[in-house]
Length: 344
Image 1 (cartoon, rainbow, N blue to C red):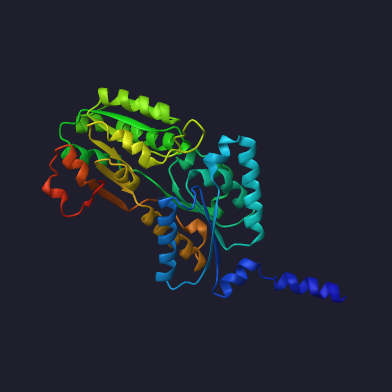
Image 2: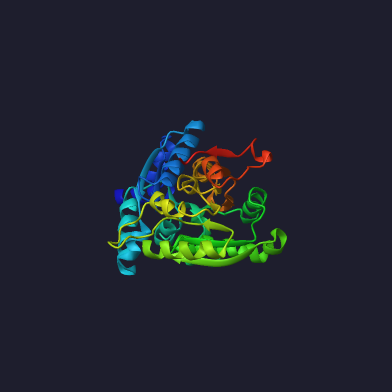
């Protein structure tokens, strides 16, 4: 009889989950899973901005950070990738988080479906792929997933380029052979074709090369400078040396500086490599937007009510020392809002 009464009471007054107790006590638990290692500046800036936003909202939370280094796992094989994805999903699930944030494409590809099928509220940020075509988006319930897309402003970048380097007619793209490189490069090319930017800005994409290793990077570099007026460096990560180790982007930049050709990039690291121009989505902005979404959820809004957003924050940076090296004059209209750096 006592057992029956207890069962009825549980039906009427269900026991709160650990996640619900976290929220009730004002100390929600959020697990952030990054696709990049701890030394990555992109990862550090997302994390910092995320925590700053929680502090600004005066919301105390337990924020746990983990790494799912997708590119490295995939090099070991798809089976290994899936095994590690399942392991980290099980580990995080056992900790009963209130929400999970997956940062960048590799983490989302490997983990989104695992968390959503467990009905864990899961957010993403820094995703470059077209989610409508993504397997994880189609397979998983919209009730448990939303986030922030990373979208590169191609038209704005070309507009800036033509004002700073007006003689530009032929553009070549050089990038690594990683999944993210292919996604972003494809989006840039698609934007140019769809919006007829070649005719609008009187430019032409003359070559696109994906360098898997340092040898190919140096070879493609030597060939592309012969074909183009400007070199567009997209993603300088995941380029490997002969032993299979990643070559630091700054080392790749040294080879670029051997040539007197204007270069542009899509992130802050490009300026440190010595590129002339960078118009980039900011990691700080991505982290801030992701935090705002999760805070709205923790305050009671359902995920289904939180729309997928595109990145809203961008940085225009100009390398003053590279401009001097190339004997180029920066138009005065950029002096008021562009960030100027020195790479010497």
